[in-house]
Length: 298
Image (cartoon, rainbow, N blue to C red; front, side, top):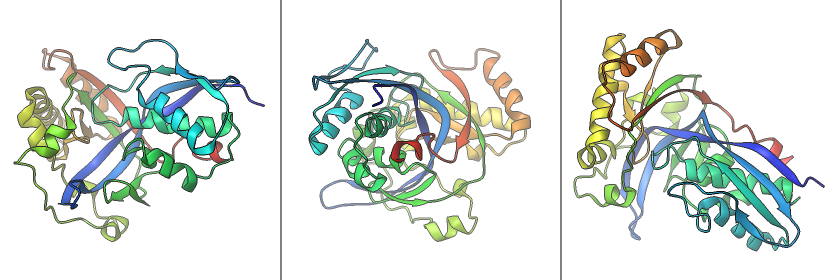
């Protein structure tokens, strides 16, 4: 029996666009987006316990070890499967916290997939995804494990392959409260969907937009400044600045950049004290399939 798994990847995601298409009677917003994973990731280490104790080792700023999604994921999986085993969880954070990159959801999904092997549960993706959905709307996407067109509250997923891309990200170093963004009276809630059939026929995902972006930029000046700066960087190398997007409800912003322009864009951002205090720049590449997708369900 395997007793320990180390360096399990939990990749970040980008929302290549994010439309709010309506609102359900229960108050939840209806969304349309394309999720794409990138090679910026957290790392998870799991060690089985035979006494049923579940906990996270170490401390991380801003993440309570008793209530974070990795611990909640393990407890939920144990309850749902009546598994008597426990686990020690170690979490190496590389994805900026509160940046709209899905780090917490990805961590939870990786714990679920890792424990599926470590505890010998033998669950299928279709069995594990509903468990993940109880932890957050983005978790099923990471279990689904490939670039996806999503509707509903982000949980109705259809494979939507995209060409390989490189991106430059700016993480402004601030968070944006998701409930505050969705509750804002200025939020557009009736965007006409692009539709999956058009995207599969080659319609560009970048003809869409992020409906949450104007609200987040108004609420947090560093988001607005980062969007403007990344647009300036795009112009400096002849890229359409209109391709600049915010991911999720913020705060990270991104720009698709051809490989031969990556260095120039990064140089532009790194010179002249252009970045906001606390901001960081990341060069990432798209990931078509979750690194654990086949392994976790073997």
